[in-house]
Amino acid sequence: MDFAIIGGGFTGLAAAAWLRSLAPEKSVAVLEAARIGAGASGRTGGMVLAESAAGDLPGLGDVLHSFAEILRKLGVDCDLSLPGAWEIGRRGKSENSPIEWKDSGTLRVVNEVPGGTLDPGKLVAGLARAAHQRGAAVIENALVERVEWSKGAELYVPNGFVRADKILFATNGLSLSLSSLEGRAEPRLTLAAATEPLRDEQLQAIGLSQGKPFYTVDFPYLWGRTCFGKSIVWGAGLVAAPDSQHLEQIDVATNEPARMFASLEQRVRNLHPALAEIRFIHRWGGPILFRENWQPVFSRHPASAHAIVLGAYAGHGVALSVHLGVWAAEALLGRRELPDWGGIEIV
Ligand SMILES: Cc1cc2nc3c(=O)[nH]c(=O)nc-3n(C[C@H](O)[C@H](O)[C@H](O)COP(=O)(O)OP(=O)(O)OC[C@H]3O[C@@H](n4cnc5c(N)ncnc54)[C@H](O)[C@@H]3O)c2cc1C
Image (cartoon, rainbow, N blue to C red; front, side):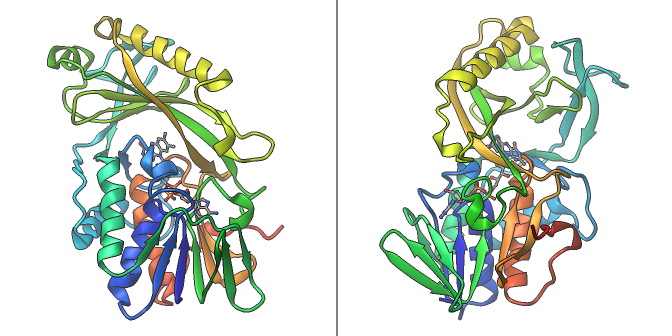
């Protein structure tokens, strides 16, 4: 095997599709522990944001433009819409704000930035299809338990092992010891909840009829977006990882997550009279990974120069994961250098 990619989310699938586009003679496999999109990519809010969580970075390029171009080249249709995104806050200049919500003060639109929304299910499925159609093997239920580095790289899955010349670790907030990110980045579970579909008058009354996603620039934090079926996905709150660091062990229906959902839902109902009776019909959590400086990890693996670790987008990874996944593919082929800002300290 020429290239093994661990993790079937946006990062790993985009990298696999791109590798086979550029080098159809090379063998590529995506090893996914559970199902495609089982991590953050199948649970994301789907707000499409520019730059990174730490802002622009040297050499990062125009993430939104690149993202749209990659999707076009890979033939992925995911209802991408880029009307802009609203920064909302309790302070700061805000003239003619469509949003006027009560939430520890009055929340109004204080800035508009490039961005928009997409259908995350269509994105993850479209990337998987693009990888598969180009000849990458996409293998589900293939948890990589360990990697032996002595003779090249051997990736051990429950039924055997795969030998690969080069590896991309695209495991995000899971399997941190495997990717070498344990102690170098903080995993969290982030929570989101979706309402029943709203009527047009309700969307109009609360200022969300333009379909622009929003996130607060001050605290308490709140983000959200309208979906194509007119429901709204709202998010706030991070649950710390258990001592084991395994986010999979958290049950979102109990304890702290359950209390956080109750508080988020009450907060939303209090934002505006048009939301007072709103029902929530889905609740879920997903992994996100933060570095201290909120810059993504994009680095050689400490165990081998033939392996790259990419992730830790700090909840800002929808467009960025695809943009950097493609960059990682080019780096694995030796056609591009890694950026200076993605390095992890050897501890
Ligand atoms: C609730 C939520 C809302 C979000 N909202 C937004 C948003 O609106 N906008 C935005 O820009 N970002 C958002 N994010 C962040 C964004 O979704 C992520 O940054 C992005 O999906 C990361 O993609 P990824 O492929 O790197 O990781 P993931 O999608 O997490 O994929 C990692 C994959 O690796 C697999 N894996 C892990 N360990 C192993 C192993 N040992 N062997 C094999 N496979 C393994 C996992 O099963 C998983 O499928 C949100 C995240 C969450 C959780």
